[in-house]
Length: 160
Image (cartoon, rainbow, N blue to C red; front, side, top):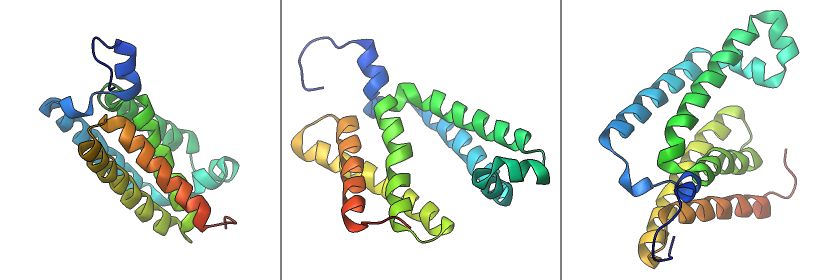
């Protein structure tokens, strides 16, 4: 990101172009995110059972429909955000806050809330670090979220 000259388009897929997001892309992200949040709220109990045990969920409901809907929504969000955010940043913002929250939180709801807060903190901390040190934004967010995961591993020796 700091090198001068042309950069490969593959580098864009890896790191994205977070500072050049268009209004249409933001609207699409908001719509898909709203649909996903609504889905999670609507099917919260079913998703808990499904994530705990697919066999148990299959006995209680048509789990393949709910699981398929979840995968389709997740794939849509990942596809839309891959070009904008980049693969490394997208993976980092999906996995790192969840890993850190699961190590620290004592309940499902606490982990969901803490994960959201840590994701926002990662983005804000990465933006500020990139601004202060004149570095690429995506890479700083990835490093900041990885730092949060590292701190969670230092704070909690034995996961619950």
